[in-house]
Image 1 (cartoon, rainbow, N blue to C red):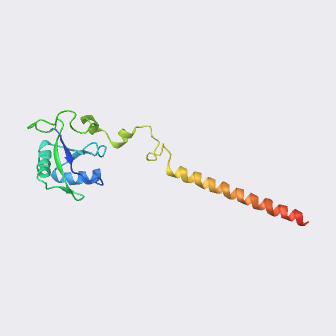
Image 2: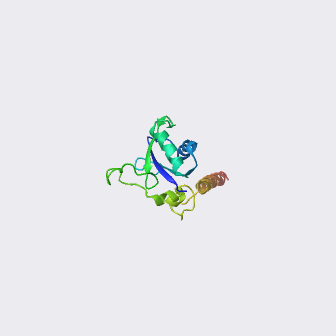
Image 3: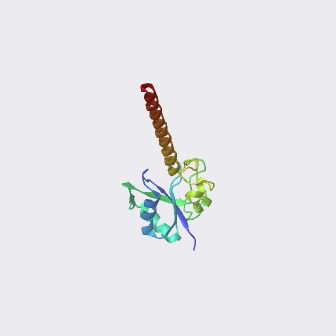
Length: 160
């Protein structure tokens, strides 16, 4: 059993990977769904079997699949589909394309494995920043209290 991948076009910018995957699951089991870099790469959907991919491709080419208000279309991706017509000549499409090996990677693999968490914040978590802000507020309050004490103490001395 060999898997087959199709490249989806016409997708809205706000459409998510999960919404695309759910829309494609009506045609069969989706084994991979990758959005790529928006504006550069076309989303790729990989089906478990060739027959599932062909069913989805027929529906997409027939204008029967809508997602977030847009009609989707598709073409075969890579070596997964039948070669009835040659693809576009090299260099005529977008400059940056993913290879088939990228289909096996998850989003965490693309970002690198040495991150400490925190979602692109250089490994720092939001809770750490909150703690720092609390410390700054606490220090500021201590300084303010200290100044109040100094002032009141000096006033007392002058009166005596």
